[in-house]
Image: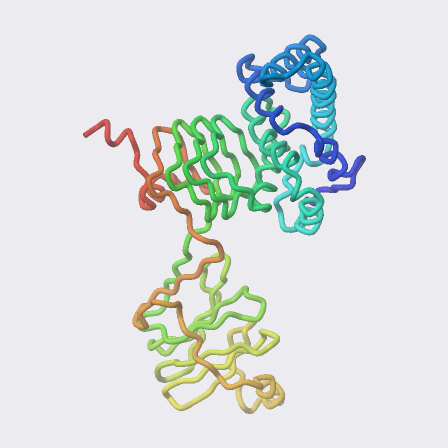
Length: 380
C-alpha cells in the first residue's frame, strides 16, 4: 500500500524541524532512555522534570564553558529537546509510522524525500536515533524500520555500529553494508536481507523471523550442455537452448520452468526474443531456424499467414547469448540472481533464530557464508 508522504504535514517538513538541532544531543538522550528503561519515550520527554534532567546532562558535556555561555546553551538545549519531542509526536501519528515505505510503489516519493535532506547531518543522525528507539518503544517500530531503509537508500556509512536490541519489521535492508555491526538481541520480522554484508558482525540471541532473502536460482531441467540463454525484453522470462535438443522458458523471479519447446532434431545453439517478447527464434545444428509463440509454447509454422511479418521483427542477427562470465560452457544448471548475495564471513552467532518467510532455518546458509556458531565451539 502506498504511503502518502504529503498527508497532514509533509514528511519532509516534519524532518525539517530537526535540521538545526545539535546532533550530539541524540546520543545523550538515548543513553538516558536506556538507563531509565523508558518505554513511553514521547511521554517521558514531555515531562518538565525529565527535560530539566536532560538539560543538565547535556550541559555537563561541555567543558570550559562560562556561566553566560551555559545560560545561552540552556535555552538552545531546551528548544532542541522540545523540537525532538514534537517531531516524535508528529511521526507517531503519520503514515510513516504505520506502513512500509520500502516498497516499489513508494520509490518516487521516497527519492523526493531523500533529496530534501540527504546532505543534512542532523536529520541523518535523527534517522539513526529513530532506529535505536525501536529497542525501547514499541509504538515507534515502523518509524525506526522505515528510517533504517532510508539510511541504506542514502548509502549512509552504517559500519561498526551498535544496533543491540533494535526491533525492525516489514521493511527492506537490501544491499546494506553492516560490516562489524552488533545486532545482539535484535528482532527482525518480515525483513528483506538480500545482499546485506554482515562480515564480522555480532548476532547473539537474535530473533530474526519471516526473513526474505534472494539467493541464486538454480534452474534444473536440461539433460545436457546449455549452449545459449536470452532474457525477454521485459526481463521476466529466460530462454535457454541445450544439447538435449530442447528450448526451455523460465520464470526469472521464481526460477520455475514455464514451458519446454520441442521440435529441433539436434543441438540448439541460439535463442533470441523478438522486440515485443511474444516470439522466440531458435537456431540449431539441424540446420533450421524455428519461431515459437512464447505464450502458447507452440512452433509457428512457415505456412502461418503471419509468418513473414513475425520474422521481420528480428532486425538483428541471431546471437549466442553467453551464459555467465567465468562459467564453463558444459554446465547444465543455469544460475540467475537479481540481488547480490548475502555476505557473513567472520560473523559470530550465539543461539538465536534465523527463519525465512517459508519457515526454513537459515543457519545452514549463514554457516555456508562463513559464520562462526559459538555454541558449536562450546561442544568441542
